[in-house]
Length: 593
Image 1 (cartoon, rainbow, N blue to C red):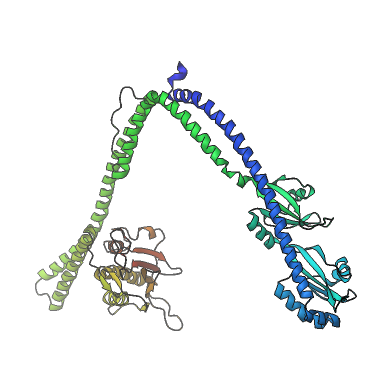
Image 2 (cartoon, rainbow, N blue to C red):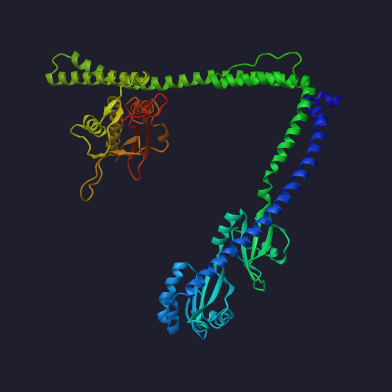
């Protein structure tokens, strides 16, 4: 009974005893019956396709022969052939060859000499058996190999005068049996087609249809199996011209056994039905045993769905019942232990994050508040002295005013970053906004050289211009500080390049970009991933919130903000914005412009 103590063994034994017999019978019966019928249908279809290829070629050959007769009977052709002058025959032969779209056109004189040979070597045609037969007043059809296939050449006599006519020469028209013609026959017969001559395959619709495996089919008239590129085919050869001889052309017709018997998947469906019926009976017998594990697993699944939907990773699985499977109850207990560990980790991580943020904020505030306070304190000492000259009084008052403004700016930066961004969308001219932001931010005696490259075709965008101007001002201010930190550069020959480049670009439909490039010191590669983090700064003064506030604004506007270095000097900050107001889902609203 130890074998039945495992739930897996109990379900296996209860279901397999009933399923094996029914599945085995279905496999044997359906496979033999359906496969046999499919093989017979495949062979019948192959024979019918072979007959159709023969009929199609016979009709084509008859058309070509009639066409050659009609051309040979034209008075104009008879007249030029009778002259026996190749330059006279040449242009007319080229014209007729182009009109009937022949691949070969050969005209001979009354003694069999070649007057014109287009598409075929003159030496092979002069005095050939086909020409001699035509000079005897009989038509002939010959075949010869050609690059990419073989040529089917119809040779007819060119006769002049009443009965008995005088034979002035011969006309040979050749047409290719190539891959293109094989593809036409394939479309008609729904089968793969290949052409062979002298026991060698010359053209085929299959990429691998010229290998030795298919060549062996030419040795037998019976239907033969062929393996090409890992797929099974059945092949049948048919002569293209009678009476057959040692150089008789052959057509090989193939049908994919793999493709044609693909419907045998129906067999698999039948087997699946039989298997499902058997398994259903087995499930009914083992239902009482299976419920001992399905209950706990359903509870675990429901709890995991709630965790995925709510994001609450601390949910627990309710306690199991006495008759539940021990493995399932162990899984539930382990899962509950895992959620306890996750909850503890979340609390510790949140606490560490708060402490870290508080530490960064306290460091910034301590630095940014202490320095102004020390300057204010020093200025107050100056004011307390008696007999302080007026210039010193004014300088001390100016210092106090400057440092108070600095304290106010520090507090404003912290509040701006902490409070949510409220946007007011309106049509905005990006080019004008960029000029205004540069003028207001970079004006002064030591202002940098700014070069504007503004796209004149940039349409007005729907955005919050004031918020965007604030973000752009912070970016430009950082660029100018990087330029000042670089120091003066040697004067280059010619016009010196601008310290800062400000560019607007119209991107793919629906987006625009603002690019700020500077010739400053660049960004340390180690600092590049952190430049948009709050309170991160490499300067001796500042809260480290300028770029963080800019990124917060750009993200709220539905855009992206990125930064990268520009070797050999400077950095580039790129803003990409939608030209329409983002919809609630974050994509531009339809129809906005």
